[in-house]
Structures are given as C-alpha cells and as structure tokens.
Amino acid sequence: MGSNSTREAAVLKTRILPVNTNDLGVFKDKATLEEWDVPTKTENLKPLQEAAKELKTSSIPVGFPTETVYGLGADATRSEAVKGIYKAKGRPSDNPLIIHVCDLTMLRSLLGKNESAADPIPEIYRDLIKKFWPGPLTILLPNPTPRVLAPEVTAGLETFGARMPDSPLALSLIKLAGVPLAAPSANASTKPSPTTAEHVRHDLDGKIELILDGGACQVGVESTVVDGLCDPPVLLRPGGLSIDRIKECAGWENVVKGYKDQSELGSKAPRAPGMKYKHYSPKAKVILYENTSQTSLTGLPLEARRAILQKDNSSPIPTIGIVSTRNWVKWAGFNARGARNSDDVSVVTLSDLDEPLEGTSCQLEFGKLIWAGNLSKATINHVANLIGISLGNDTKDIAHGLFSALRELDKRNVDVIYVEGIDDEGDIAAAVMNRLRKAASVIENS
Ligand code: TXA
Ligand code: MG
Image (cartoon, rainbow, N blue to C red; front, side):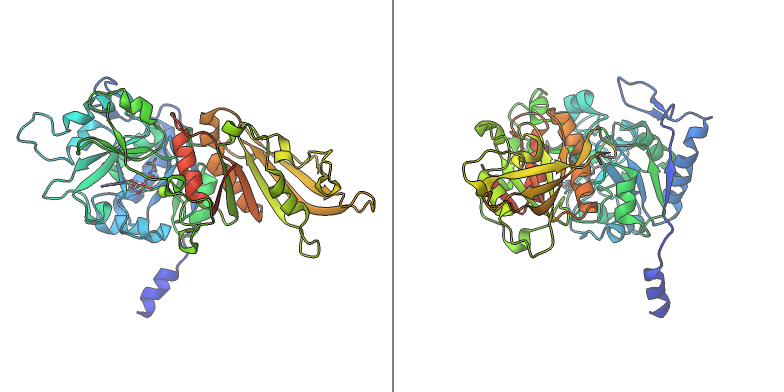
C-alpha cells in the first residue's frame, strides 16, 4: 500500500518534443489508402520514434496533434495502456474512446472476417471513406470476437469508433507504434479540448511524459461521429465534417441527427447545478448569446451591459472576457455612448497591450470599462477590466480559434465570458454551437 501510493503520487517530467512536419510520410496509393508509408531516412522522425517506443513499452499515454484537436494516445490493444489514458485525464471509464488507424490495412485487422462480403469494412462506409478519409470523421464498426481491442476502449459496447486523422504526424506515429491508438482529446476531463501542445501541457503537466508538438490544429473542433450500422444512419456528434457533406454520400441521404443540444432541451434559464461545467468548460461562467444574426444584434443587450455598469463598486473590479464572432461590434457595445439615460454611459479606454492569441490569427485586446455614472455628478468609476477576442467571420476561423480563446481567457482569470453565438445551420457551425452550448452555464436567446 505504502509503495503503491508513493508511485501514485509520483510526478512525471513532461517534455514537449517539437516536430518538423515536412516529409513524415505518404500513402503508397492515395486512391486506396491501403498503406501509409514512413520514409526510412529522415531526422524529422526522431521524436516520433521516441514517442512510438513509449507507446509500445509503457502505460503512460502520449500527447500528439491531429487535424482536429490534440489527442492523448495509447496502444488500443493493451488494457494497461488504455487505463493510463483515463488516469491521466481524470475521465470516467464509461465513455468509449476513438481508435485511430494509419491506413485501411490496419483498420481491416480490427474487423475480423466477414463471411458474406469480400471486404470486412461495411459497404455503407465505402463512399464516406473514399471522400473524407483521412479527415475529421469517426465511423462506428462492429467489434468482432475474439476481441483485438482492449475492453476499456469500447466501454463494454459491441461497436468501436474509428478514424484516420488527416495529419502525417499522427499517421506516422501510429505506423511506427505498429498498433491502433485509442485517443480522446488531450485535455483534463471537462476542460475545452487542446489545440496546441502548450494547452496539453497546461492540463496534463506531470501526468504524462511526452507531447509531440506539430503546431496548432487546423480544424479546432473534434471529429464528426456517425453510425451507419443502423437504418437510417445517425450522426452522433457534430464535428469537423458537416452533415451536408455527409448527406452527399451514397446511403447517407437520410442521415438523422442523434444528438441533442441544450437549446433544443428548451433551456433559457440557468442550468441545474449538476449540469454545469461538464464539458468544454473554462473555469469562468460562460454566457452564450444565440441567434445574433437573426436579430442583427450588434453587441450585448442594454440590460446585460447595465447590470455590469451598475455593479457595486466596493467589491473587487471584475475582469470580463468577450468572444465575438460575426456581428458584435468592438467591446460588444460597452463603448456605445449617447444613451438618453446617463446611467447607460460607458466608455472603454483601450490599453495598447494587444497580444496575439496563440495558434490563431486573432488578437487579444485589453480595455478598461469606465462608468461615468450620474453625469451631473461627474463621477468616474473604473467598473471592470475587459479582454476581447474577435474570432472573425468565417466559420472555419471561428472553429479554429474557439477553444484557444476560452482557454486564454481562463488563463487570465476572467470572472465571466460573454460569447456571441452563430447560426448553426449547415457546415461546421453545428459543431461550434454544440460545444458552446455544453460550455455555457447560461444561454440567452437574444
Ligand atoms: O477529433 C477527435 O475525434 C479527437 C481527436 C483526438 O481524434 N478525439 C476525440 O475522442 O474526440 P473522444 O474519445 O474525446 O471522443 C469519443 C466520443 C464519445 O464521447 C462518443 O461520442 C463517440 O466518440 N464514440 C466512440 N466510440 C463510440 C461507440 N462505440 N459508440 C458510440 N459512440 C462512440
Ligand atoms: Mg474530448
């Protein structure tokens, strides 16, 4: 017992290994995806070889980038290795993990023989794989007996989720390890998913040994998860591939949505405490504004601004984070002057401390919120500190920067984060809004 608990308490030395992502590998034949080929001679593979050795020999998972988010990988065929993931993340083990394969040869090795067809990969997935692999799409497959995958991967289900990431770094790591990698997002349980190696270190420092650093993830939200084993096929999690693209594939014209968002559960009121901070959540309270495009709302509603402006000044000055997307003007309306009622007058003074937001093309903007109060008395109060991040217009940019923005504001200890939502029809906006609704403790339908 004594020696065991000492081991439990041991803190690992976490290292980030930078990877030069040039020339890490190619498909022998891009048309078949049959075999991923790793070059024999390149210095660039060194850190991957070190990580692959760790994956084969130890039970401590490795952080690595994919095109969606950073993953926390382990040998999916070894129970001890898979348990290491749950331990490092602090994630309950009743949640199935996604299996990452480097090519179709590896995927077939997990499927066993299908007596009724030449190919063990179900026909329903053929078109999807052809169009969208490698890429941000996870498909459910039957888990054959005898089992190849460790039971901890599937959480007791008869199916497993698999994907082929669109990242030469990830594909070569899998190939060098020689086994499929089970990999959830590499965040501490309940936190926003990591899109840079630094995010992974922030959450898992001391809990893992290696993080491969391949730069910021392109997509920024996790893969789309689909189940084609039932009729009609179901979309289980919106993600980096849109439902519209999936509908274009043979057999997927009638795909149905199998997940529910907070908005559809009819919640405007604050959620039950038990539902708070379950997923993708920073420490700060997130207040999400939906449907801003429909009302052409240019910033926070007056009441919301007023509540902050009229805050009792004796308490410490709060820091407010603002994440804007398509319509909110700078400072979400806090710098709107000229209201009739003098109580509404607010002014933002900008500091010249703008900083880049890591892994994105966004800037963090710093401001002080000054309330002139009752103008006749000319009282000037410093009411709040503001930190603004504008993710831009384009859905891809919004998805790419979203988790980074939430994490950055957390790092700066903001007390509350106001987020401008987007219309979630079509494209990957559905994934953005799904994650935001899970992160939010209050959803306003403005
Ligand atoms: O983009 C991604 O998918 C990232 C990167 C690292 O590849 N991975 C990821 O994995 O998000 P994870 O473990 O956080 O997501 C697992 C989710 C489950 O919550 C569930 O929604 C679905 O995938 N899933 C996996 N296996 C399943 C199964 N057998 N049946 C139903 N859903 C499954
Ligand atoms: Mg996750």
